[in-house]
Image 1 (cartoon, helix red, strand yellow):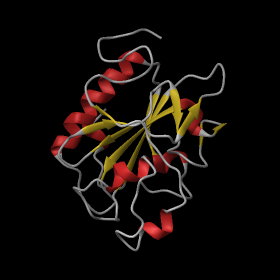
Image 2 (cartoon, one colour):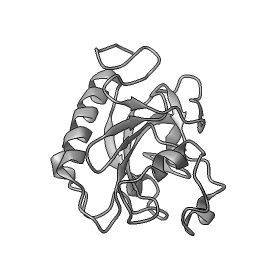
Image 3 (tube, one colour):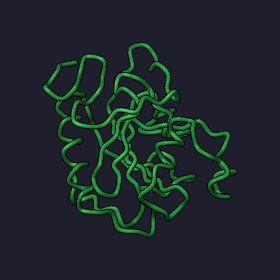
Length: 178
């Protein structure tokens, strides 16, 4: 792996806030990152501009804050990155490690996409257009990731788990990032 000015040797991106999630583990030996998976998340669903996503990824979600949280209270989830509505970028897991973002998934005949992917969550849902600030930050991040890692494809969660997931949703503008 080559190093640019944006990533440390241990896989942390210098151009964002870091909140280390406990929800990760090591990638299988001789497995490297080669796809990026774009997701969407909002907590509670359709509600933005709070810290519930961060709390969820850190296993610190107050389950009494919203009735929906009781449905997800036992889940242990993370992504490598989160892009909030105003463009704030947060990293939760080193790119060298396996974040728990894809769940049951497959891509080009390979199972368990967490093994070989970098997961990026966008604060959003299937019914709300993404913000220009999110696209700006996402494009910057994607360019740095492509330079640093051997990224072959950028896909949606819906592409790797089509029977379970729809994100990043129909309002995500793929033309902006290609």
